[in-house]
Length: 432
Image (cartoon, rainbow, N blue to C red; front, top):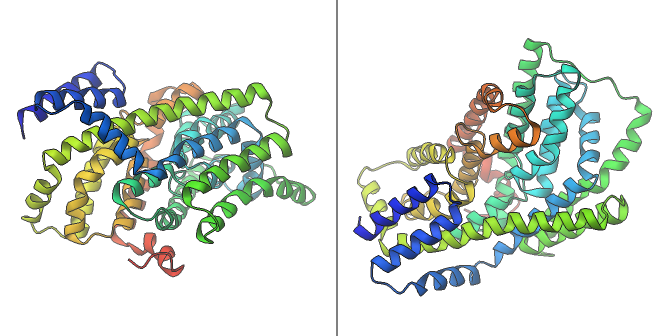
């Protein structure tokens, strides 16, 4: 490890400790590396522009963020919750089950865990704690756990970013997320059923059969979005990036024209929130391009691959070790940063060991989503704390059982690759 690299890492850590955002911290640290190593600092701009120019798929990120913001601002989320209530509200722990089912459906539209937790999650927690029906900590914990399904079921913003750094098919990754997403949903719903039975959580009043047609009719337009997106992608009508634009346009049409729930003031707020969120991600991406240039210059991936191959690790054991590392880092780092900085470091080793990169991509995204709810610095914990007012310690206390069941689901995905790869293969979209 060279002296410029050590100084860069020390500066990066110091900036993060001082509370600097990760994007600007990476940019400043990377430029300092270039100066100390005697390289032209203009290479930072070249690395950013070259990375962006070769990453057309990144356009999908702000478009999916926009679609999620439109759905939260309009009445689409409410309609999806009513639809979920009709499906699973009569199960033991009805509203908790509705919470999970709503996240599953919403995940087919937004691709963002934070959008799910901050939008629909806030409403769900309010419904669950009303009249002391559920403990606030439990309501917030299941909201955070179910929100992790969002980026697993397609579309998925993290999978778009992984596809960019690994040069894998976005379509194959999207299909690969369906099985794991359904597994996580089933695992969480089963866990909630057991907890609800033990703690005597209530069921919801039965809905009259006469009300079902209207509920279903109101829920059909939003439910068409995943079908339109996936059908368009796999039917060759549009690319995954274009699908993100279709998602935004369709959400805008539903909220603004069909439901008339999106005024000019609300729409302005949606655009402002989208620009703000996209700018944060853009800074992280820019910083990651500079750091990746440094990593390649220092030949860290090749050195790591050579070192690890000396241990004669099996693909499964290596994936388990990487998962453990990413879980640890996920407690402290943003998922976008890990995807753009850490994944390129381990890619050469993955290729040398013959690890399927689509399988690994889905596994690593699941890994990072679990990190979002893992103490002490899981991002979703702070999002839920700020949007619902539930004390952080109460959320953490109730989260451990859900973290455990999600870790078990992750282990199943690692040990049984067909959970990820069966659907891409059977549809003929992937032959790996």
